[in-house]
Image (cartoon, rainbow, N blue to C red):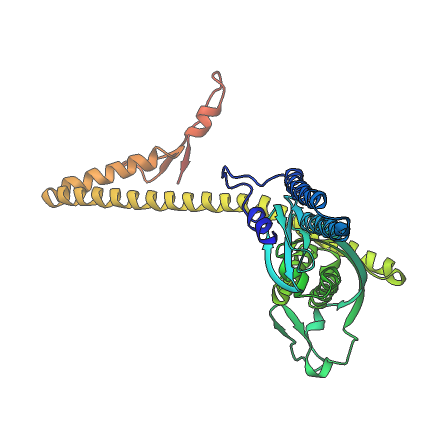
Length: 396
């Protein structure tokens, strides 16, 4: 009968098959009906025998009745034992089946049956996200000089993990204390690994999270932990914690890690607040300088481009003027070679015309006299209309 129930209830209830598991009430009713028929048949045979026989046959009839009663009780116990083996796994759960304490399989949501006393099951919620929080004091680097020993030897960093130099292993003068609170959210993804590979999943995860947080904070500088390094701290702790769980084969997925609080100890809280304020001022000044640079640089680049454009234009102008002068000289040279005297006189007259047209004084030279007459034309043009002019000055 155990094999009968096991074969029926191990079928997939969502496979779409037309065969459905029989209802428990119907099974019990059918078994009782068959038992009643069997019991009635035995009573009928015993009655016929008692009517044809003597009164000495009353003891065998009592024995047969007691045997039927024991059979009925045994059937009831078997049915109750079979009924106790039925269980239902909810949609968010998975069940781990054990046979005499050894792992057999992991069953998915749906109705299932196990023989009680031989097999047992443990349900595990694989969709529930659990969380825990913890907080304590950790050691961290205090300054940029913490990466160097007293002799100037640089500390090594392997896989983003700070390793102090040999001379500073027992020296905590470069360290400082910071109080950190962390919250971790996780869920179970493999019930078998979660139940059998680790003794206590929640405790193991909490201890691993504390170790990961201590390792990450120990590799960071104090100012970074208190100010701009929180995102890096959260990411590193989650990565290291998940790596530990994978190494342990704990069947746990780290969903999220949140750094709730990172602060200096209360005894030096005011001093560290000043440090944080100084860091914020530094960031503000940097942002102001960057904004000023973004404002000034385009103006300077525009001025540079304008000067370059003007220089290029002047260069082009000088080249073109020089080419024009060369072309004019070559044209004049050709004419001069054909008529030198005429060209020389014409050039002299053009030059004198250009010179005299830009002066306000005229000098007259006559052959009858050795004197030069100076005509101050600039004064003539500046005098009123009815003004009488003096005689021209004679330069001897």
